[in-house]
Picture 1 (cartoon, one colour):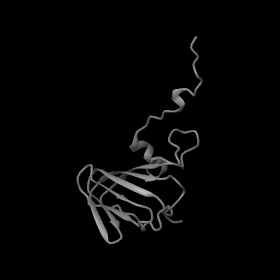
Picture 2 (cartoon, rainbow, N blue to C red):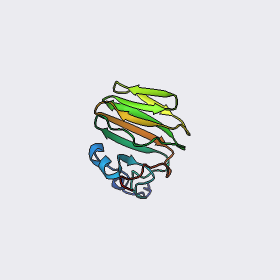
Picture 3 (cartoon, rainbow, N blue to C red):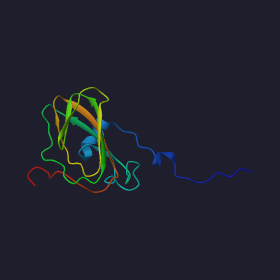
Picture 4 (tube, rainbow, N blue to C red):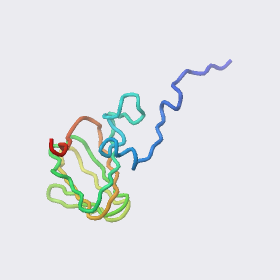
Length: 133
């Protein structure tokens, strides 16, 4: 006689969405520590962001003292990442840059751009202050 082990229904472990739609809810972030516990998108291991940037969009201030490693992949457009002593242009879909813990950075969309960012681990960290606050 075979026994089945009890587990949560698959529907509790699966989330289906659209990055363009879901990104608007959390400043572009799709997955990370900031999603509710129990949500399949909650993670303390990694954060994933879907960035939609109009031409000329740029970070208001440099990220300083970053405690995570990051990967930024260009999906479409032209996107420039500024690092200390180096400017990296992502110009072809699939171009990417990785920077390690402690590397300050900023960015600017040279054309309408779509990028995917991955940071790890997912811990509370740097956040650009809200406008007017």
